[in-house]
Amino acid sequence: MTTSANDNGLETLNELLADNQQYELLNGFDVSRNHVAMTLIALYRLGATSEQMKVYYSGKKKNENPSLVDENVNINEENWYQYLGTSASASTSYIRFFTGKIKAEGVENALKCYLPKLISGVAAHAYHPLIRLAYGAEINNVGETAFAMAYFASTYRSFCGYR
Image (cartoon, rainbow, N blue to C red; front, side):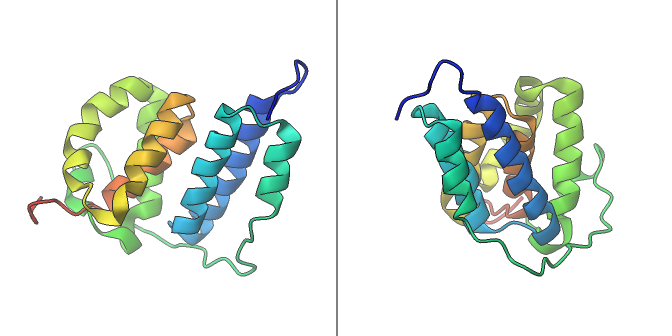
């Protein structure tokens, strides 16, 4: 795969990732959508053109009737750790919380603050949140980094079985 000098691959990547993230906000975490995000980033890093990324993304099916995830959990700095592992009730709230933190503090500072706690819960979901986090941080994408951190938090399960 080669990228032409005029190809705006990063812009296309970020647009496709944003579309995928909007779908996840409506439907909650879905491992297949998680794979879509990671594959798009891998394609970009391997030199795929905008058109190649669009073709890949257009072939990914979306649920025609989104569930419109409804969450009323108010996650904030004082209580964010209390909802760890409560996937169904807090995933969208975690996305909003971490997006705000990353926008305010930057990717690096947010990771320094929250990753030490989140990494202890990596036993869940076969390391998908960790992989997605690495990809999102590598391209400095706020949304992907926030989604990965929220995925960590909402599927949190400690190796030792305690928080």
